[in-house]
Amino acid sequence: MLERIRIVLIGTSHPGNIGGTARAMHNMGLEDLALVAPRCEPITADTVSRASGADALVHNARTVDNLEDAVGDCTLVVGASARSRNLPWPMVTPRELGERLPTELASPQGRVALVFGREDSGLTNTEMQRCHAHVHIPTNPDFSSLNLAAAVQVLAYECRLACQAESPEMQEPDAAPLASHEELEHYFAHLERTLIDIGFHDPDMPRQLMARLRRFTLRAHPERMELNILRGILSATQRQVEHRQDE
Amino acid sequence: MLERIRIVLIGTSHPGNIGGTARAMHNMGLEDLALVAPRCEPITADTVSRASGADALVHNARTVDNLEDAVGDCTLVVGASARSRNLPWPMVTPRELGERLPTELASPQGRVALVFGREDSGLTNTEMQRCHAHVHIPTNPDFSSLNLAAAVQVLAYECRLACQAESPEMQEPDAAPLASHEELEHYFAHLERTLIDIGFHDPDMPRQLMARLRRFTLRAHPERMELNILRGILSATQRQVEHRQDE
Image 1 (cartoon, chains in turn cyan, yellow):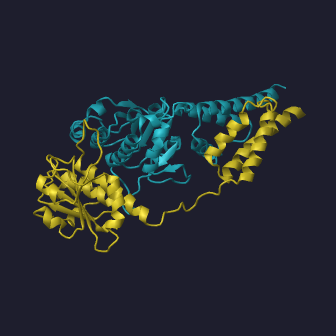
Image 2 (spheres, chains in turn yellow, purple):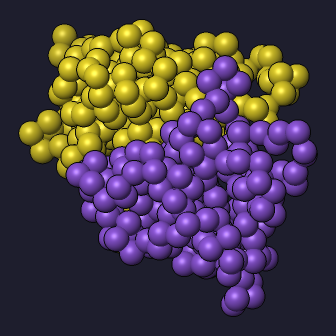
Image 3 (tube, rainbow over the protein chains, first blue to last red):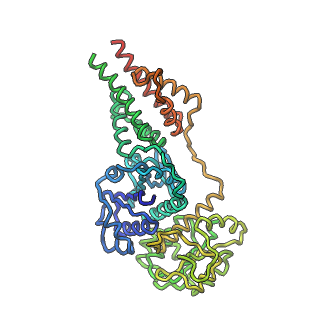
């Protein structure tokens, strides 16, 4: 199961943190690292020193330009976040995240991304809203900013515990395929177009409408077939608008 | 409770690891650090850099010559150990350690020490046998050596969780009102009418459509405000159909 958990670092500034992340991952049996628009040279002497033998993970890491390219194939995308800001998002503790993994990874196409933001500023609101849930590591409220590799360490530790606890015979063989991140994004784009078509949504006055609909939908963790039904409804709605314009 | 948990580092070689330990401790609300015969200058630029604002813990740390002087007042001394060697010792997992803390610290004179060995060689057999129990952080058997500050991070995290669980659970302060059963049923009725209107649903050939949409929606456990948005979308959709029929 651990091989289908990806660590995604966005805009990392310090090579030492990339090395420390690689070490923490490899210690816990995670191997899949993706770097999104790093703000430093990923492989330096600092990286190798902090990786302490795990620098192969950095050499094998995919480097991409944006979050979408790093998580398109994932069925669950979880952002590590200090706390939810204006719009509360589905929030899990690290332990709850671990408890969810066996179910999430029961289907062979299940794939989980854990997303970590910049050392100085974390994830942007847009990035946070691309995540299906947020995970918050409990901290001292007076000193809450964890080192990046330390945050990876805690979540990777919970992943390892969860996967150790899971015995193979407990897996559900016939779990319905879940929608991938990419399929979800296509759905949200289709939904937004349709809401504009029917005059319900004005992109110039968004009033958090799409964010709220995202949050609601992602909380339900849709199966691929459910998403197909929802897109069918959107297409039928759009046909109403088109017919009306034709008449 | 956390103030009565002490982190003890024996023979540390790298000031950066002392700084990283201080940061991990302070992040989790631990403040009591003791250094036993450090093999480096404890406070350097590396310490301060890795401590990232928590270097007061290093300034306040007691430095002593041997383990006995660091843990004499403790009621439970637990050594972090890769694995028990020739002589099997009482062994706990990090989680079991956490579970034990509330009992251990229930008495006001209860005090716990978590002891970490040298970066290169860990604890000596003599030191291990001074410990009341050993704690082993589960790791990848092919790459088991954790960074010192990362090991402190994992155990400090378990301490924080254990102590949080003891205090009254923090409630979400501004949980949004959830939709009632009745509101949900009104929504489903409205949804079904709309799907019939747009020609997507034929009640004579239901094909489990409404059951699937119910299951999806209920899984998300909708808030009242979300349901209002969804009903607004349905009304806007119905207006399209009505306009078309009027024209």
